Length: 198
Image (cartoon, rainbow, N blue to C red):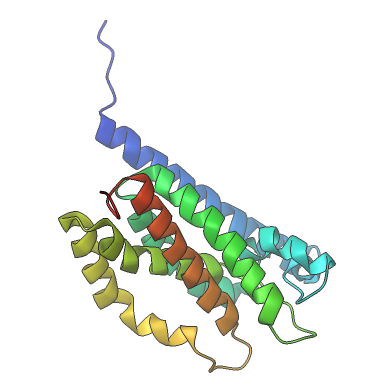
């Protein structure tokens, strides 16, 4: 009786697919529950600036959204950029996600306007964007440089989101998420000895 063997590439793709689908499922399940069961009250778990209670939003805010329009707008770039982050190693995704959540969330908590609440996966999206754009600079290998150029061509216009502009949009989350991704790119490059190796 023959037993099929899973190739490393197939196993990696399945792992990437499972992670991305799991995150999307959490996003959508929480928004469905928020809209139809909790009547919007889950947003209270977002980031409230300079409030001890608001610190919990650092963990929860990226998984919550203001409405379905907000969620839909974030879903596609999340899938694309999260997958690109995983291209070299799946472990990069977890490192970038963790650093982005902490740096992005703390940045929002520190400087967002009072009496506001910030929710949304755009903190993560801009973290992935920052990581992908700067990994080529820090890692200095051909694959990373090419990927950075491709991401710049596809998503370069999103960098305007780092600046104050549209009312109701947290540019603070975008900016500090991006900074978190940049820090992750630097740390991962150091860990892999691409940067600053003597």
